[in-house]
Length: 264
Image (cartoon, rainbow, N blue to C red):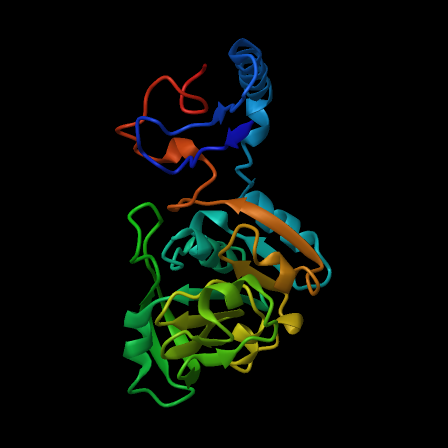
């Protein structure tokens, strides 16, 4: 028996869960088993929806936390899933709610380049993030102080992490800049880099353990690195290419009706 879980982000006529059976015995017995699996999938289908917390609710929970780091995990901008890693929803929430000691990473080579002529400590108005996907809320324009610059290269602290399987032990984020606005620190990279190793922060002179809140653009694989230091973690529902809320996407080719897009 094979369970084909289906890739829900694919806009194809055959997108969806499925089952196959291979047998050298009675084909009808195999078909009955397939029927029972299909019925079970229908019965349990609602358990597949895990959209996460509304950002405002997550910020309310964050404010109740007395110590950090607290993770604000954003699967909709999951870099490992192919998202651009420059969504600004979590940054906007940190700014709106005045969260101090917060930090996010944005893949934004344009903003990195604009900091190149500046001296450390200088201020500049930047249009941060929001350039890689039309599904997100767009760039955030703000005045930021340049804290540091680097070539963006670092060696993994955990050579067995998922990032090692993707990029090897030495990682190149491209030219980077760290900027700060109020209580929020923003690491700007030139190459999108999944947040699977804490060396990403430390290579920029930032100790992640000392942060109060960290925006994490991932779904699952960040946990090996971040869970050991996290005091709490909240998965949030934001717009983006890897959103868990499938109703956000403009499917054109998928067969309808289909759950959860339709009440079937």
